[in-house]
Length: 383
Image 1 (cartoon, rainbow, N blue to C red):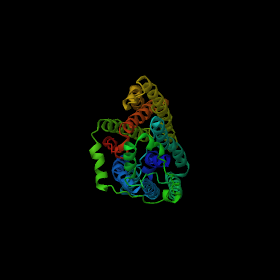
Image 2 (tube, helix red, strand yellow; image 1 turned 60 degrees about the horizontal axis):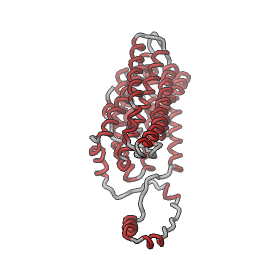
Image 3 (cartoon, one colour; image 1 turned 120 degrees about the horizontal axis):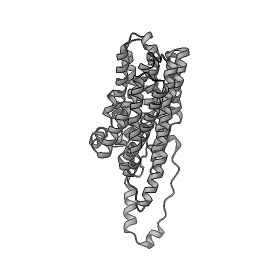
Image 4 (cartoon, rainbow, N blue to C red; image 1 turned 60 degrees about the vertical axis):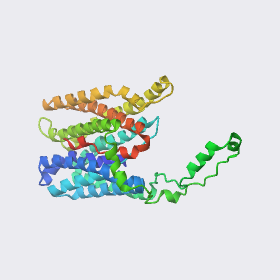
């Protein structure tokens, strides 16, 4: 699902050259449409997550995936500039999905998620570009829409609800109080009650509502916005997304012109460089960082601190900047395509590792408030 959604979010620049000839639209409109998509993603972070927290993740995932599918179907048949803007907003709004992970392997789990997202945003466009070069961009959109529709139907029948709802009320607190006041001999006689298996049909409930106020959930991102780790991750990740979009936009615009003269398939192949760098970066920021914090925690007397992940941050931060310089300078000079592609690989390594590290630090720092951490990232709307 992550790969398919990120494909929908990132595939359109591959088609720009064909869309300019097929639709009465300018290059500026296409670029602004991409900006609208990122704005929709930021809005979606605010809209979908509170509903997912109150009414359950299952319904939120099904609805958002269905909305992405609808947006892609619409994109396959759009004919006006207004539709370009509207479809981009719908896909961006619905594409804001929420993910989570687990303690000492959180970096690895986040790395797997980022690999899937970058594969959808970078590797899938290679196939889409080759398909569009032979059959046209509308056919590629139809193929993607069919995949998303099938995923939506699969979710309806198989996606289980992962939201935990306590059925015992405050019974846990009463049991804790008993354990605190009981003597050692009494504790020995306490037998834990057998728990019946959780009914499978309840995991497929469409709505799993709890009593918290929806308005208070909407306020949570505003309350946590200025927490140091959240603010740092928002700025760093948001700026990384900003430059990732800039690289993709420049690639789609510059490489269809001389001296390159690429078609849709060849432009898509350039996005493959981003996939290579992102996978390497996510392995560095995920698996290697998880290993390093275990070693650092042992040196710290067995105490783990979230900021330990920052020890591996300088290298990807430098490579992110170096990759941007290489890509920009060589593209401006019309150098052989290998050198801009090399810059994309280096940049994507830095971005993948940096994104994995800073987002995992937020999860480590505020595990009890995780749902509120998917705050909108303002730099995403800048290009």
